[in-house]
Length: 315
Image 1 (cartoon, one colour):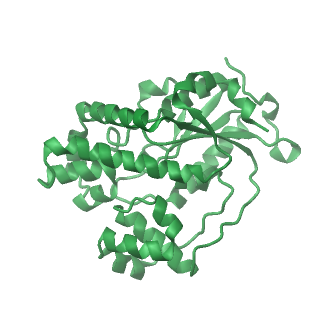
Image 2 (cartoon, helix red, strand yellow):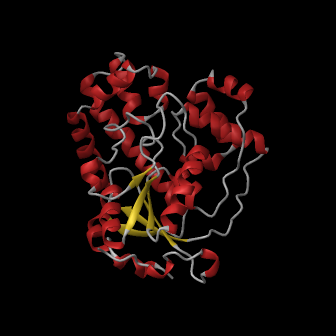
Image 3 (cartoon, one colour):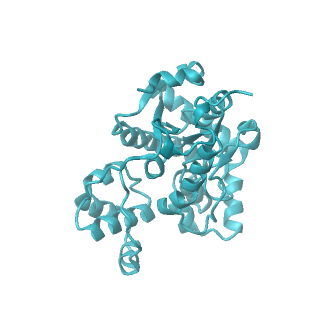
C-alpha cells in the first residue's frame, strides 16, 4: 500500500497542526487527460477523487460528458458523479454543499483529496480562496430573462459583468441568466474577498500545444460518437428530458439534440461539435490562466509528474 504524502496528518485535528492538510486540484481544458492523470496520482500518493464537472453530476450524462467509467477508475474512490437528475438544474452552490463535507471527510481519514475538473467555477467554489456570492433565486428576473434569447442575454451580461462574459458559455441561457441574477442583486461586479482555507491547495494544470489539443478533442469526440452518444441523448429524451433542457446542458447534448430535431445534418455534426468543444477548451484555459497559483505541466510530461514528484511544487 502506498503511503499518504502527509502521514502525520492522520487522526490529527487541523487546529493542532502548524502545517495544513493538503488538497490537490487538477485542472485544465477538456480532453487533456485530467481523469487519467488524477487516477494515476491517487494510486501513488493515497488519494480519493472529487469530480468538479458541471455535467458529470447528472445521472445519464455519461458518454456525452466524458464521464469516467468504473474500469477507468481502477479502484480509486470517486465522488460527485451521478448525484442529480438531468431534469433539474444543479447549481454551483448545490455542488459546494455536497462536495465540501466529502472533502473534509477524506482529509479526516488521512487521505489526500484530489479535485478534478474543467468547470472552473466549481473548482474555485470548493477550493478557491475567493468567496462566491450567495445570491438567492429571483423568480421574477428569471422569468423575464429566460424568455429572451441567449444572444440577447449575453449582450446584457457583457454590460453588467464583462469579466464573467469572457469566460461563460454564451449559448447557455441558464448560466447567462444566473450570472445576470448575481450581478443585478449585488448592484455591480463584486470584488471577491479572499478567505483563509483550512487546508493547503496544490494546483496542477495540464496543458498542451493548441494543435495537439485540437487533435485530442477530435479523437475523443469520434470515440464517443462510436460509443453511442446519439443513443444516449435519445434515451434522455425518452426519459422526459426536454429539448430545451438538452440545449441548456450544452455542447454534445445541445448539438446532438439539434441533429435529432432535424436542425443539423449528421455529416455536419462531428465538425460542428469539434469546433465548439475547442472553443470551450479555450474558454477553460482563459479561466484557469487567471489563477497564478497553478503549476502548468505539458500533457506529454503527465506520467513523470503523477506521483511524489508533484510535491516539489509545494512552497
